[in-house]
Amino acid sequence: MTTGTEHFFLGVDGGGTGCRARIEDGSGVVLGQGLSGPATTRLGIEEAWASISRAFNAAFDEAGFGPEEVARTHVGVGLAGTGRKGSVEALMAIPHPFASIDFVSDGMGACLGAHSGRDGAIVIAGTGSIGLGFAEGRSLRVGGYGFPISDEGSGADLGLKAIQFALRANDGRMEKTALLIEVMQRFQNDPAEAIAWMDRSSATDYASLAPMVMRHADQGDSAGRRIVQSAAEQIDTLVRTLFDQGAPRVTLLGGLSSPLEAWLAPDVRRRLKPADGDAVSGAIILARKALQAS
Image (cartoon, rainbow, N blue to C red; front, side, top):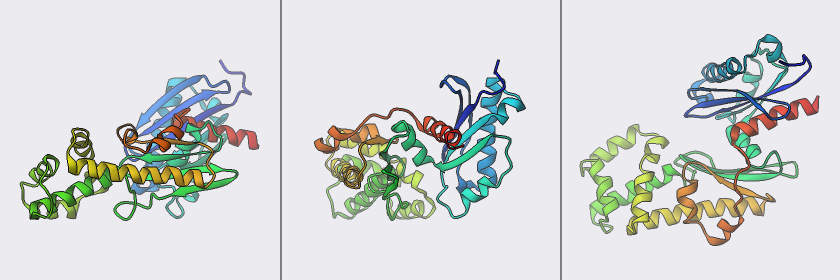
């Protein structure tokens, strides 16, 4: 039962692979959760909002909320692709039944969650890579301009380097290691097959090779070690640059964060801080800030 004056806080984390929503009361007690499919502005504003809606409606259903409780709910959304011109304005223009709603990028949502809303930064090492943060009222950003022109040290970058090295080895320009032999086997040992694959492949396709690269590197493969060490150096640089720009703390996130951490420089590993919470926690912090500001 609610008092009729109690506020609620809904956080949504919308990414390229899925969307998660969670409702909390003023004390931080979780009341409901929901899931849906991909939510990113790259799918279009309507498609992204539809996915967000499915997630938060599932959370409302689990919480047993009716229109009265929904109207007292403040919403924060961390959404992939909000850097696209006009996307936030288009999202804010969509009618909603909430007390308030605010949007940030999924990366900034993750950063808020990682540091409980305090100043700090994150480096995301996943399909892509980027450094993001807040410091003394400033927003920080390093890299993350998209594959293949950026996203150094990412899964996509590992996959790209593996294919480049495999083609060189196939030519006789490099030693054929076990990793490079396995990569070429994926293309039937035919460079023309690799070219055809390249013409239709996305960053996600390149990143699908990253586990193979990591496996061979951990087994001592010379080409694999060279690729992974280079990637780790790029992540080292992102972390150090964020500290140089004034971030008081940095957290490493993303699907490659655990596999790559052992390859990072000792000074970088020592300075990394574990995440306090996830991206949904960050979106809830955003929602709470709206109430505090009102």
